[in-house]
Length: 168
Ligand code: OFO
Image (cartoon, rainbow, N blue to C red):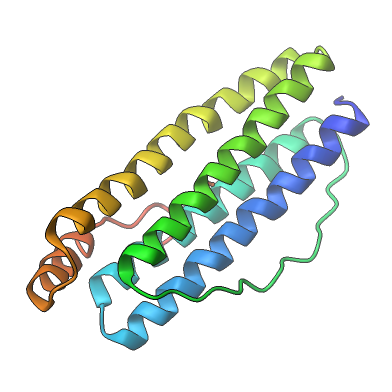
């Protein structure tokens, strides 16, 4: 059994992961409309991964015999002036998610919940990867710019991303 505080924060995190999925899916839709099909596919796969993150948390809460309390997933509202801006907003979003996991880690330590603390480690490591990937793409855009040729190459490269188990 986990404490009420831990249950509550994990339920909130499930919502945040599903919101992340919605956010990236909305970005993907914009990119499909713009004709940047490779980058759109990249965001669509990212959206699928966020659902996996949410579902792993869901499974954990169930396994710990705590109540799932699904909250409304907000509609993502965003505007972007360039591709670089879009990736920078995504990077900022991931940094917020990392902070959220750090808060969960702190709470589980205060609650002496070692099992959940250990479970969260996987997410903390995953966040390092998530932040790095967005950061790397931003760096590339900063170096090569957003000319037609650069966008063509970036679209081609990101379009090679392989689907995860969620989206075959
Ligand atoms: Fe779930 O890692 Fe991104 O948000």
